[in-house]
Image 1 (cartoon, rainbow, N blue to C red):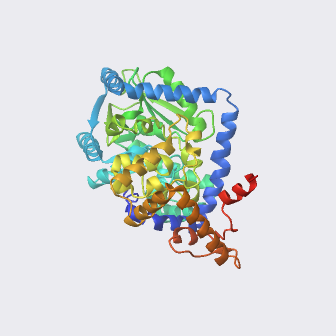
Image 2 (cartoon, one colour; image 1 turned 180 degrees about the horizontal axis):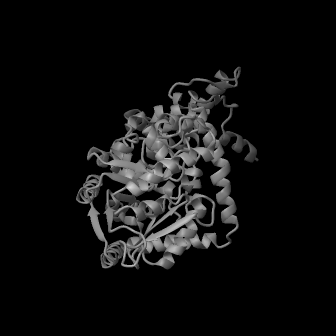
Image 3 (cartoon, rainbow, N blue to C red; image 1 turned 90 degrees about the horizontal axis):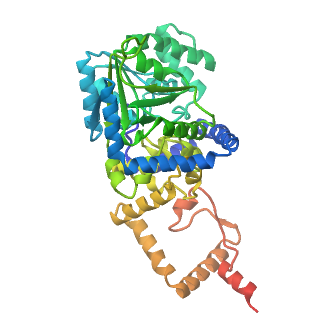
Length: 475
């Protein structure tokens, strides 16, 4: 899909659209009462959750510090069990590798489990350009594929869509497949998805999944789902391809038990997902099912640069979505406003790292720096600190507009001169207090349209806080 490729300069327009979308706002409000509340209950019910967060952080830090060793160990184990490992430096190389595997397999139909990294590298577009039929098997991803849309959330990709919208989409696409009547019953809609996909699973020549984790000790990849579609995708096709970032590897199965306890609680507020599947190589003699060939495509795409720089901590991310669910910006504008595969706080860091500052645009600034994302992150990524560093980089590279640079520079010059700052702010407050005393607020102000176009600016009451404090403490 190409729906996620939106110009960064349209960020303000997308934010305005998101804020004005009544359906989206209702969905986001509902999300606040589901994911956030569920996570809170799950964390409260597990007294050792904070200790698990420390363990998860330590596991990822250790692995990243020794990433070359564990990736090599993982590759050795995959090969020893009959699989093949491919290394991709960027999105184009990753797509070429997958396309080559599909050509060599004589593939015509490809089923796909949910995979954010495949969205990252625009894999569907590359495969469809080769004439392949590509079918998303996650219910949410399938709905978006029909609508040619990008996910708006990494865990619940259709959070922006209403049941009525999905019903209209299914009536349009499923009418000729034996479902002529429009329905808004959720169970019936899911039944349609199952019926349509059932034949596709058996027809598929290649099944592609992502990986939540890779275990170096055994050469296994792990996916967690609540629908079972990942199992059908990976076991019924003749060829199974795993597309994953290089940072997903962890040392042992014991480490995996820690990460799984963190992931489910942080993402869904549940103890564990319905399906946790470990795949280790192709079908062996005596196996009743499984692929004839097993390939893993390990993708860099900017991750090695992160590993060597100030943003290594971002590679701890386990894609749970907790930072998004607790972000006041994301929960106001939705995922599509970010114009990126990865929305929310994690996307505001990952997008400039993967695609560059030019592609990221305003994303590092789409944050209030309130710190909620860091407080709920299961592996304690300091997202506000990373976003501040990105802002500094954009400032140094002069990606910030001249108007903003002038304004911040003027404020910085004034703020470093306390006496002058006190006089200037005191005079400004008195003038604004006098000018706004009748209405009590300003609906427009010079140089402050970014604030007043969306809210009123209360008129100052007169004295500044410093002046009031000085009066209070005066003998």
